[in-house]
Amino acid sequence: MSSVYELLVAFDPHGLRDSAKGWKALAHAVESTGTRHRNQVNGPLHQAGTPATLGLDQSAYDKRKAALQTIKNKLEDTANTKDEEHQMFLLGIDPEAYEGDGRAIVATGNPDKATHTAVFVPGTNTEFNGVPGQIDLIRRLQGNAKGNAEPGETVSVISYLGYDTPESLLEAGNPQRGKDGADDMRRFSDGLRVAHGEPKTHLTYVAHSYGTYAVGVAASGGDGLHADDIIALGSPGMGVDEAKELQTNPDHVWISEAEDDPTRLVGGYTLGPGPHIIGFGGNNLYTDTSGHGGYWNENSDSFNNQGKIIAGKQPEVDPKEIVIGGFIPIWH
Image (cartoon, rainbow, N blue to C red; front, side, top):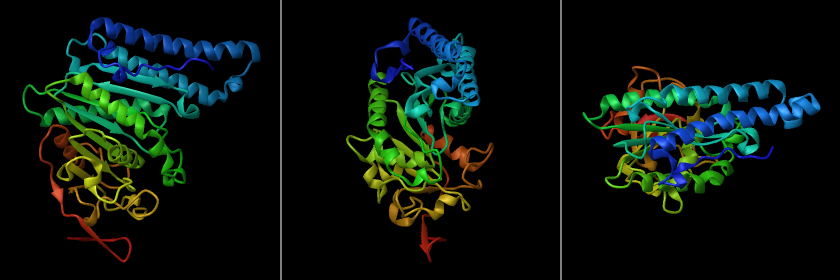
């Protein structure tokens, strides 16, 4: 396999994303990406008779091909939409990155021009084949934030699968994945700031699960992420002891932790303390959803709080927690 399907416009702030010509180039790149991907598979298939020569079994190949096609379809569905807030923008794609787990960065709404921009960073078990579902999620987040924004304000939400997410719960205890992706995330955030220019967009990072650790490590190192707000959903730890280490005003660090989220059991181990605990600082969001994956349940306060923060509005909060006897939360 030879080519890397890379279109990281954030590293070329004056590049493709801001014009009709640029959009056509992106659309062509998506199409050629799909074509190259098929050609790379079909060539060896013709010679060797099996996709195993590519390091893929038939099922894995079919899933990757279907994901590419779905991403292409979702981009094309909005290509002729006059309102950029409802267009999809491909910022980076490489199905073979991270030993086949894949890399994809997609925006709904133009982050170069949006009043409010959010970057969603997923966690464990999120791979290239899950990108179509991530696109659906950022569309929902955008819609919720738009409903909370002031008239005339625009919203862009980006799905950032730009680091090597853990494939298992065992791997999710390893801090190295987040550390390895920190520099790229910081460069990406720098690119967003430069591309948008003045007046600055209101920038929020929304992270889930291991993604909260990846964001924490990126935000606390170097010059940080230049985020106005950081939201941590179901966090096993953010790689820091206190919110103030994230180089964002601790009053704008928000933690949502469902009462039965199993990540409550792992705070304080390899990834840092649970951020919902009182000593961490920041704000605990009112959370009315259940489990590790319920934070985006429709019509929930958990989901609406995210939209409020992205739109620069005050969410509903709960007190920080004191832990007694290991895992028993006590309201402070």
